[in-house]
Amino acid sequence: MSSPQVIEKAPMSVTQVKVALERIKASEEGLELNFRAQKTMEYAEDFAKLPPTDAEEVFAAIRKLEIPRLKDAYIHKLIDLLPQSEKSVKVVLSSYHMSVPAEQIKKIAEILQEHAPKRQ
Image (cartoon, rainbow, N blue to C red; front, side, top):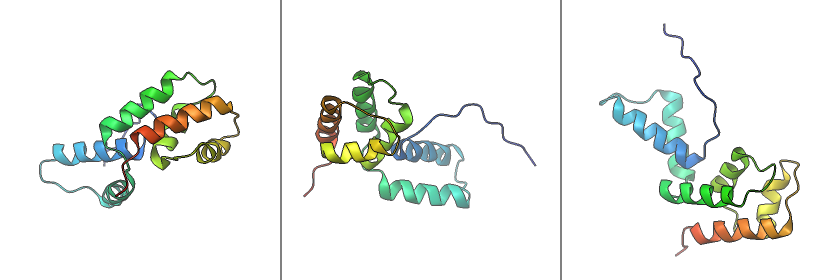
């Protein structure tokens, strides 16, 4: 039995997980994903709200704000949940026990609103 080795740990959004699993599935040439990977793929298909290019743009735009103590994992959570209002952004970030100035929260909410899928 092989023993996998962790090369790097990095936070990912659900959209990135979906892309990574699709890449793995395509590289396996007809083989199916194992049970856990298949369940993860189903979850990612149901809950990924943005296409990969939009998710990357949102990530870059929020990083460009250069908010102190705002880690990549927090940005990925914002991308996953895609809060639309300033209040919702504040609620998501409050779970990380950090304070973000109101003007920065407003900018984050504006970025997320720009990239949010249009409701029909």
